[in-house]
Length: 220
Image 1 (cartoon, rainbow, N blue to C red):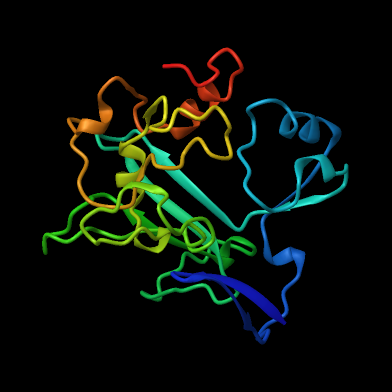
Image 2: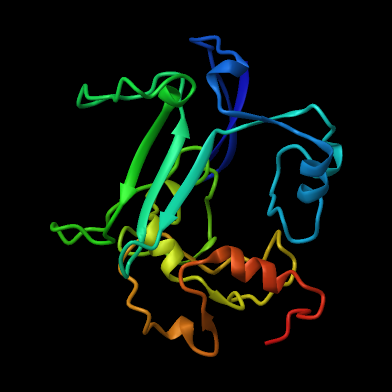
């Protein structure tokens, strides 16, 4: 089958050979109800670029979990974990808890508890389903790595630059975040790009919820 990948010089179509057939039972799923769809279609509840359009959802459709970020306020810098589905989940230490059952055995995990490693290089932690489509001049700062790719990103660096309004002040949720990310590298909170903006304590959802309101209309 054909698959589109996003390289530095633009989208390319490549041939992919399926190596394993999976079923819906290999995913964590939610079967949509009328209330679910009403919530998803509600203003400001879903931030979407690409994929199936919200207007096309129907009762009985399934949502499949392929990637998710989890952050907790356990210390001042928060904790950052990301999980993603894989047909060949890793178990590098051979210590998978036997209490974990399918479909959760099909999810891999990575964590980010620091932005810069002991080698003075940026720590890279990303979700292959969520971050890899991000390419081009999307980030505010390309960071120490000198690359603008989601596959060079770090959860902490990205969320620690969350502030309202976004740099471009665009009320359209499809464009609001362009120019407001930092792929990786250290964030102290004293950077120039925080001037005249309100730090939202690592929460991009708060920024999008406010900036998408009609009353804001792109005004600072």
